[in-house]
Length: 114
Image 1 (cartoon, one colour):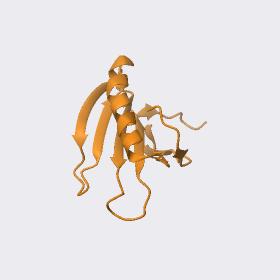
Image 2 (image 1 turned 90 degrees about the vertical axis):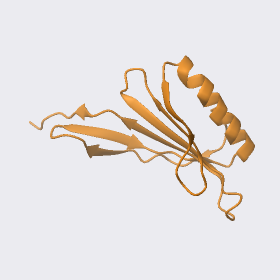
Image 3 (image 1 turned 180 degrees about the vertical axis):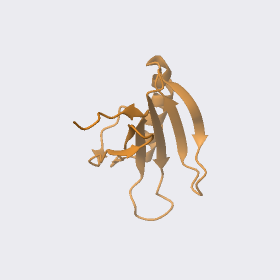
Image 4 (image 1 turned 135 degrees about the vertical axis):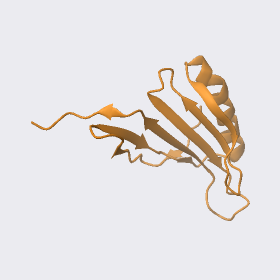
């Protein structure tokens, strides 16, 4: 995105996705950046993902009342997916605006305990 701001410490989690598999997911939000700069960062992602082999599968607005700008992209081999939303909080009060990034992995096999 080319932005410098405050990133909340990511808290990756794993969850079952099959009898022997797990899926990893993490979501580090970025705040402390002017909203116009965040919009430019989203534009850089739109251009950068395809150059890095990622396919944008959704680009528009989410279904929330705030209609947050929303990009979903899958890695070349579809092992990973990223969901990015820009939450512009200026019209809702004093909460900071932020970019929410959720990365999800494909299901991977876990090692059987010995």
